[in-house]
Length: 251
Length: 320
Image (cartoon, rainbow over all chains, first blue to last red; front, top):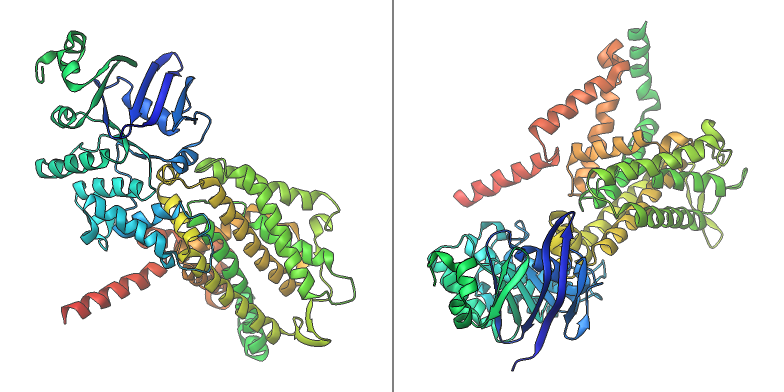
């Protein structure tokens, strides 16, 4: 099953005199992990921020399930089915792992605003939170205070919070950064698992993981897309070799 | 001379005894309600320096709505005061909540001062001299007078009941999905947006509820003193209530109550000439020193002491 999740055409972002993202187009489809790679400063994070609504593009369009979302705020995009995690782990450290996910799931229950009912007294929200924790493998850590979890677990929790909102598209900004070898293995397994039901756009520097996981790769350099293709095509591309993989590390 | 005067004051207190303490405690409890309303905002990361606007406007509402020589109905004037404060909070909140951090502090301060000058410089509420409330409102049900706010005892219990009601109401609100979302917003607003929470609506909801409750406190305060002047709208007053909230501890609700008691009682002691003689005139100096000490050694407020004792006790229990 391959259907369209997120599509961007001609995206451009200019900061003052600097063009951070220049005429970038890409399609992220469900069932295929789309990786975005490029050297530091290539505009990857800016592109993710344009897609999530944290930044407003100078020009270009973004479609989520055929719907134009370029005028939508980040929270509207989230409610339309766009989930993201930030490069910096963004959990609520003083809440339990379960409460982090419960809070996320609550955003999908606008009627749950009765001020006289305890937040935990909504069974459907609790179930959704537990489902999300289960997907990332943190269910037995549900009662742990999030700030006491290991770095890898916090990263998993971050993803679980997004999953608790039932997104169609996931934008993941360096989920593997700073992880130990063992944690990386379980995160890679999680990402592979997520790809079956979501359209995933992954920004990552860990090339082994990227080439192992992705179905489509987009290489960005200086704000422009240099090449898009399967891992084999990218590996074989002389331009990419020259501009980015040139050191021969993965060539 | 001052010493004699101070000694005379202390000697006279037992004579007035009960009423004095009832009035002092009523004042403290009203301040506690006001501080709790601010706690809802500050706990959500919205440090307002204009909160006295909602308190003061409600005070003016009760005075201006009351007939001159007759008691106004509490049924009508209390909701009216709270609704007007809430409406004002909706208006101001819509504008100021687009800012955050230091800018939020500055624009709330600016709006508070605008209202201060509105009442100070126009004849709307007696100008800078203020205006008197000659007869306090009464609560009637089926023709019989349930509550006469003129009587200190009635007033005392009325305020006490309302303070408890506000405390329990806000506790429920804090534990509700709305309160949890506010807690999340105070930690990481960007993340809350990315999870689909319309942050502005949540903050506006908190701002309006907080304004209405500040109005409740302002209504009670106007009833107690029988007088309102622009001073109750001024930023000094907003700062005082913020200070006593920091003093007691932010985000706990009972911190607001403890803060109000500690602040007023401390003020009473520091301003007591029998205790401090000539220095009592300069009670703010002592107050300032105490606040500096509290902020230095108990940055989470006086109530964090309770938490600490609680934790020690728990630790001991688990050792047994």
